[in-house]
Image (cartoon, rainbow, N blue to C red; front, side, top):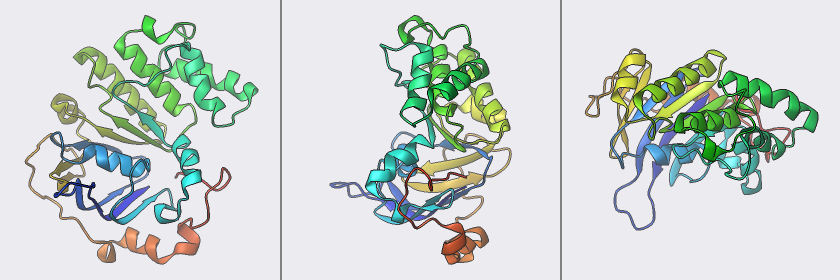
Length: 269
């Protein structure tokens, strides 16, 4: 579960906020597209979730974790439990496909025995079981993106954030990546995708949230379409009137982790 409550982000030197009073609630197991023109605030919102940036004001909760109480030294542990896929893959060029996926598990403290069991399973999921010995330079763009996805889901994250995952791919390859994300979503992983691909958004008809000038101007919860000038079909509901958010914020002992986060008590749900 993801909750942003009246989140605003103003970068130093900027007059206009990158995010302006954004309230957003994402349910577990949802598949959501985040769309908007360049500069609309999509990347900033994603950086809020991965804690690359802090909000100027507002509250963020992910899986019951209140980011106000997230200590700096524990942020790397949090990020290892969030799957993130980038447009430019960010693979290690001097490591094989197998080693790229294994490395993500190694830095998370997974045992060698578990790595040997997990990596082939994940590579089979993304259709690369026969490419484990190859290096990124020997792969196509679509194959490299599949490696990036394999690396992100190897730790079985509850949330997968994909930032323009098809931006550098041809249409046919893009659809292969999208179908893979759908399959991962069917396993119960919450998927957030930023994209400019109108065809994909309109065909899948999932939830579509539209950003413009840092504000949510459209939130189509079902059968959404790509519309950058979408009217506000469902107005943002402030936390005091939002039943789920109100319950979270009024029940800190049961639902919100306010303890310093170590490896044992980070839990993304």
